[in-house]
Image (tube, rainbow, N blue to C red; front, side, top):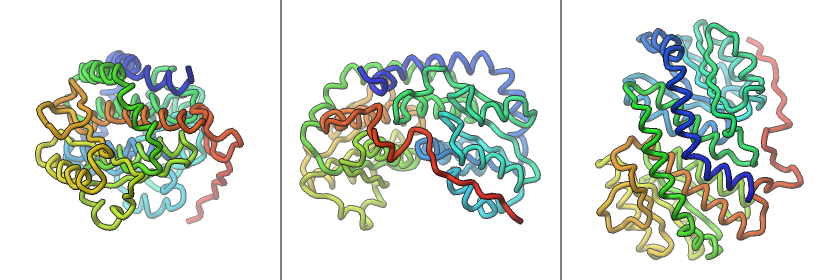
Length: 366
């Protein structure tokens, strides 16, 4: 059994452990966040690199709606290369950093650049590594709060799996107003049922698809991007993956479809949005055949659904991304094994590394 396999399958247990940790620290979390969130002109920036950046992309649309304020997802890679543009508006800012290791050069530099560019900044560090630079640097900072995920989330495998979902869950539960920590148990139970049916996804890996397209709307657009990255990572680029929104896909990217393409459509729980998701699913079935379209849904009674996530009906699309992404992780694992790759280390020659290397952080000159 590979580490990656274990880390995918441990996620329900990790989510329950994460919720218990948040409950135990609820007083400290409230003391830190409540005065910050009370600022009427506060800007919230969600940041990270790669998969950690996509956590922000999933969260930002729904958090903006829930908090009725501006919430933006900006990758650390964009902050580091263009800090004066990313922090052009000098307003009170809460920088929320997602980091598995906390040792990526851009993660550390983005936090420092926020302080250099802004007159008022607080930092919320959500990380899986107590020994990482990001955690150690901000542990004693009165303007910062470090939230450590359960130790098992510091994935040993190459790809981020349980680290990603635990950090995403944490941010939603503490930043979105009036959240019930029992949601973690509900999602864990739904995902346990899904994992018990993991073999249903094996058939797709055996079909030797050359391309996979992931489509999702709103928060699920960020999920589509993360899904595409998981496949690229675990197959070392041998299976090409694409991502888009259902409406955006028609505007050119649809040209990627051919007879060796699998399309995965994530259906929203929002009744208005899901109409567009269902429309593209119907169109794709007509274009490439129903057998080549995997529709993922949390609602029952929809005859178009190929795979239903039981027990996730009605949850916000941000949280729906948790069981949905497990499907993408399982597909990536299946394709990796089918291609003879090693999921824990798909790049044995070091072309791509678990913690990014080779980045030079240049000094900022005003």
